Image 1 (tube, rainbow, N blue to C red):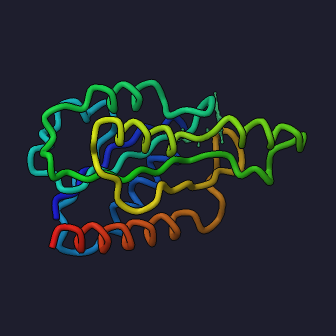
Image 2 (image 1 turned 180 degrees about the vertical axis):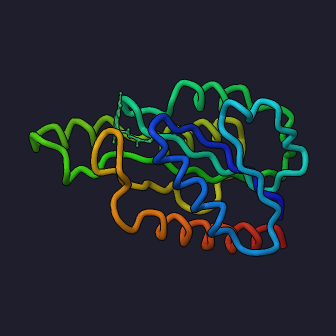
Image 3 (image 1 turned 60 degrees about the horizontal axis):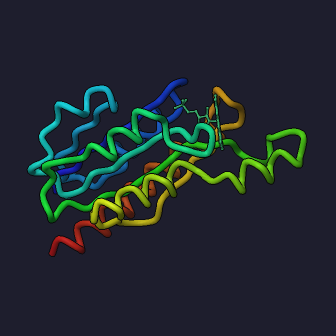
Length: 163
Ligand SMILES: Cc1cc2nc3c(=O)[nH]c(=O)nc-3n(C[C@H](O)[C@H](O)[C@H](O)COP(=O)(O)O)c2cc1C
């Protein structure tokens, strides 16, 4: 299976998750990992699975990821997609009422999933969220391992769908 991972990252946490996702994909996959700044150049014509990752900022993916999603063109009709975001661990947010505001505001992964569906791109797996314990990180302990596991499950699911 041919997998392209496109991500944005300001402080490096989403980049670390993207690398863990690449590492967790099943053997036998051809994997390309690109930042959203490099992604415009990529030819997606052989891509079976496009994985997109973004930090959640102001309840949204970054403007660059939003632009990438709305500008997606020339992808094969058989291409499926999966999404993940990074976001604050609500347990670390103070004062507590702010947790409610953040949660009600929503997250990048759901917005990316909606944008892909809008483009009639089928989603694989469940949108994933990986937690940071402060605005600039670090990632919560165990999130890299969880990202690798998510990727393994995802690639099994996507391989099945290709059969
Ligand atoms: C300006 C700004 C807005 C943010 N907005 C949200 C938000 O709405 N929800 C949330 O869960 N985290 C929010 N965060 C925390 C980010 O999700 C966190 O910075 C990001 O996961 C780090 O990823 P990166 O290191 O790849 O940039 C925000 C952080 C910044 C700096």
